Amino acid sequence: MLRTTVTKIAIRTRSASLPFSKTQSVFTKHSPCALSPRFFSTTTTSSKSLFSALSGQTFALLSAGLISGLAGYSVAIRRNAETAQQKPQYGSREDCAHAIEELKKTFLDDEIAVSTNADDLYSHGFSINDHHLGQSHTVIIYPTCTEDVVKVVKIATKYRMPIIAYSGGTSLEGQFRGYSSGGICLDMSRMNKIIEIHEADSDLVCQSGVCWTDINDTLHEKGIPLFFPLDPAPTATIGGMLSTGCSGTNAVRYGTAKAEWFLNATVVLPSGEVIKTRQRSRKSSAGFDTTKLFIGAEGTLGIVTEAIVHFPDVRKATEAVREVVLSGVGIQCVELMDDLCMHALNRHGQSGDSWPEKDTLLFKFQGHNKASLSECGRVAAEIVAKHGGFGFRFAKDEEQANDLWATRKNALYACLALVDGSKAWSTDVCVPVSKLSELVYETKKDLAATGLVAPIAGHAGDGNFHASLLIRNEEELKIAKDVVSRMIHRAIALDGTCTGEHGVGIGKKEYLIEELGAGTVELMKTVKRVIDPLCLFNPGKLYPDDPVADSKGV
Image (cartoon, rainbow, N blue to C red; front, side, top):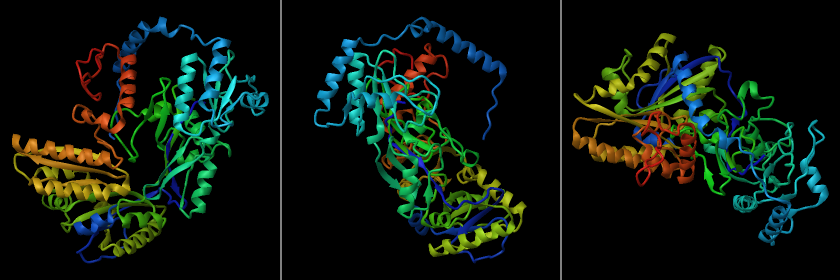
């Protein structure tokens, strides 16, 4: 398996609530505290307190459209069939010998980086754990970093040598067997470092040779109440787990590697170019998910050198929210609505209640019965009070809870009514949750300086927020465009994304290279050209325009 990846992994808190019943809550700083232990509660905090604390639609595919799309795809692929069926030509034995000599010279200062030892070659091409025939490699390389892998890929390309990545050696379908004409085996075992742990964001960055059990042991030793839930063979490593799309005994609860456990990957492509598939924010709608292009690809598309893995719950949008989650309280979601948004909901919302017009958090809890939900509310209320919020209250009944949530869902329409004759420029960005407070605070200051009316609502639990800039004329449109551009640059600089939910379309395609890098964007364009060579499907969207006239049609 070819893998070189900085993996961002998601991690789960060790105490988890059972996802059966639901409850919502809102926090109010200046409203009196009501202690009715029901399904939902509300509290708001002042803007300053909140910001300092803050650190589907289902789509139906019609059969006729599907058949038409598949027919078009078939026609396009057929044109390249002759080229695709050509047998690859690999280097001769002489080429192989030259490659080995160049590899030895390249890693001259690292005496254990290159091995042609017979026992070493045998152990990397055979396995007692499966029935497949063994096949030795020609040479074993032990890289220590992404740059080492780049050097190997370039030499392999020069001499047309196959490259097979080797990780934990636990694969059972012959993935790490050598190639019959000879080849290079990349043993990733020396790339076994945990580079960064972001406890506040529930993710970490590691090299691809790190074993998942070592990750959990490290977290336990450091007293960090998180764990990485994918659990295949005990010696399996992150690179191999990503490349095979693994799962394990925890899959019933936590899913597989093809879920959201790998946030991004650093990959060395066959060209020798290094790409990072996306930023570190918890979610992104910026183009298609190139991370998943490599999950399950078994090293056939690139070598993963590092990855960002994340843990299942997001634990910091505010210091209060972080503490609530750390306490083991079952939170399904945490929503943020600023003071202007609450003002709009009071004037034009669907709920019959009147809420304090302060920055507000709306919680939805999980629990297996009413007593469990009441306990969640009690713990959350105590924690929020420590951070300057009070007035925590549950909704008096399920009907009020549903009305409150429906009001949140229709916040955009309530906000539109604030300015007669206005249209909304609704935009979203997303950052690692520990960066959300900084982003919201700076954006609020920026908006206030422009004079535009722009309520903010967002998903505080995953670092995603939405601003609705209400505009009435061309002058305000220009101001809004500048504000949104600054917001996006700010989010990307904080390791975030230009869009957490809304997508790219024509509105944000100019930011993709800044966010993803030119290499990743070109990879996306290459996939587009292969599948849609005539560029008939939705032209002009998603992909950034080329600096010059785009002769490739993408």
